[in-house]
Image (tube, rainbow, N blue to C red; front, side, top):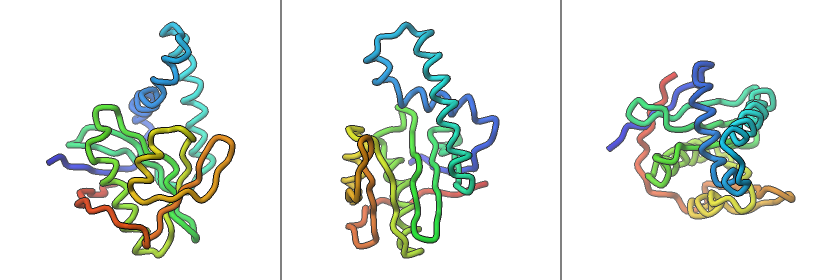
Length: 169
């Protein structure tokens, strides 16, 4: 079984974070039919804009997910007095659909239960992650033109997966 660890994001993770970001936009880019250099320029601009989350959530935890010591994904968690917010979670394609995402979210469920706070997130409408969140017990609590607001509370049915996360910062 693989070992999943979490560590704080560091400046030297930028190349990995760009690779991860680009991997999440491949379907969208393919629809445009752009040549590779145009796609890369677009991704570079969008990636830089996405890094604005550091300013939008200065107190959030920006984490790198590692699997057997290799960078595999990213998770951003923002804790408030009212809730836990999953700002972002992404895994490289080879680590998707392997149970890693469920394990990471189970850790957040445990924290949610322990703190008696709901776990909230937003997901882009039409994103396949919506099905993943619904399967884990998240319910829709609102929506904008582009996103669904979703929430998990301890009263939701738990997901039975072993917690394998060690936090090392």
